[in-house]
Length: 284
Ligand SMILES: Nc1ncnc2c1ncn2[C@@H]1O[C@H](COP(=O)(O)OP(=O)(O)OP(=O)(O)O)[C@@H](O)[C@H]1O
Ligand SMILES: [Mg+2]
Image (cartoon, rainbow, N blue to C red; front, side):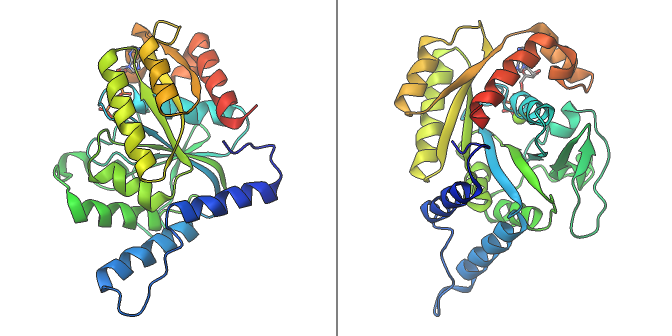
């Protein structure tokens, strides 16, 4: 994984290779179907818009409810605590929970470019900040999702960031696939739990990401007993990736969430766990 201590030139080289892996360098060519051309042009605009963000990391799982949003939020704040400039993108458009978890009810100013909202030092953007939650269309599928996410990414001004953490919707449907392709992520962190079924699904989601040439940066075991389960370590071996750490199963987590607080600010043990994970991510 890219390391903050890396000389700038090496980081650029890494990003350059990465773009090629994704086919992001594709250029519109004469005779190309106009809709395909529009998609390529939009990706280029998104890329330009995000060019001042050094690392973009997705938090992902095939299975719902394993703790992606919890992990994404705390990773973002743990990175910020280490002195990095951090943004948190709620890219789960079906159930955008980030703002709810953080107890935020601000809406982004409806002027372009959209400006993420600062919450205790982390810049937050969510589709939930654009529309009234209750009036939000519940079913967004296929091309609409692609268009909507593309427009949102293209029109959000994050400024200069060290890390953008993206909370994704679960599964292998349109939304996470679109995000992988449009955002040109460095890769994913897979969140799993000690259960066998979570492990099997994590392997599935990891293999899907790899098939799309998106790297699996590592695996976090959430709701853990403290020692990673055999299944979690099998996920790590099968995906040929890194084990990043465990987050213990704690009743306090749901209470802290319900109160709109950030877990690492409320509980020293949780803070230590996320701090260790962030040190592995940043290569410290
Ligand atoms: N380590 C933990 N210990 C106890 N409860 C947890 C832990 N991590 C998350 N939870 C609780 O589990 C529930 C699901 O967590 P979260 O919403 O973060 O999962 P998710 O993977 O983002 O879900 P979805 O797939 O719906 O987006 C929440 O109520 C959260 O408070
Ligand atoms: Mg979630």
